[in-house]
Length: 144
Figure 1 (cartoon, rainbow, N blue to C red):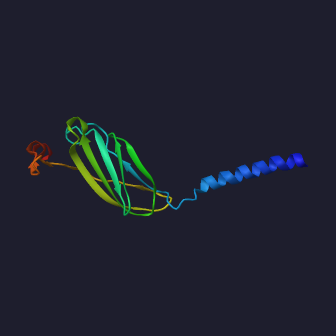
Figure 2: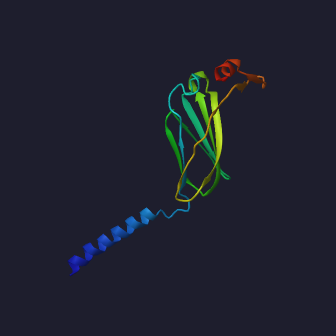
Figure 3: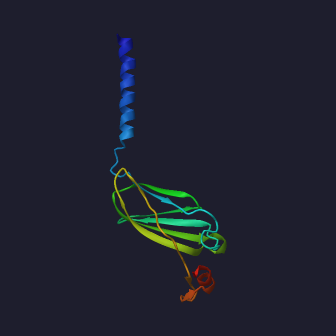
């Protein structure tokens, strides 16, 4: 009888521990999934080759980098309102901003929220003297 109790007790403890791990036990658990556009010349041959994506909440800001066509997932977020900001940049040209966009997202606990957004091509930049310069070449490329 003792030989049966020890393995049965061990099996019961193993199953109980496995169930506790699956339940999570965390009040966080919501996530945001951002699918990035693919293709090197998505932005009218402006050579965007990397993305910087930020999730901005009330108490924290999380930033991640990714290549074109990738997926970024921000996990273990508390339920609440967030702003997702994405920037397409040209790393070969001093991380020049090619396009950007943002979207407000509501995160619910234990759910993944998809984040579709539109990136708008940037036609201006800030010069070293602090002035704003309009890039006429980009304006010509993006004119319809």
